[in-house]
Length: 191
Image 1 (cartoon, rainbow, N blue to C red):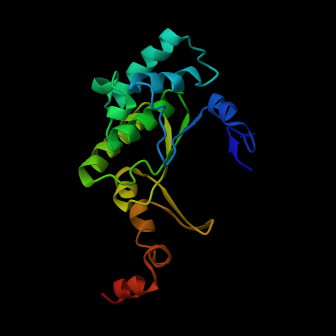
Image 2 (image 1 turned 60 degrees about the horizontal axis):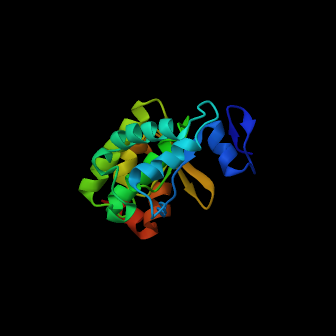
């Protein structure tokens, strides 16, 4: 069972989950291509938590605030087609943040980014977290895990392998073996 604040959300429709305070991104970014960045985020603001019923004017004001938070303020009026891949990932985060979630699920928002883009994305995640949003990050880029997480949980085939501080978890032999292979784990052990 999956619970938020003690209430089950298992099997609940996505819009109801969003109204309860969970925002999420998708690994494959799919913005509304015929809209601007502001319009994409405004849609998220309109369908946000039940505590903040918004009209269109308020939704677009919130969209501007969130676009500034994620570093897209200067690109608010650009069509999505003019945005780079890193910008589209920021837009995906902005759309989720505009729902004003308590909990934000980020699904591999840094996949495919170069080191500079990862650093910028890490700063964005820190900025979102600083607003009081709890962030649950699903990520395979270890530098990201160490750079932003206070606690890491490693799963292998749906089972928890290790959990704790990222630096400790990433040195766990079971984690190394599961993700890098037995040969690599043996090489590390012998060095």
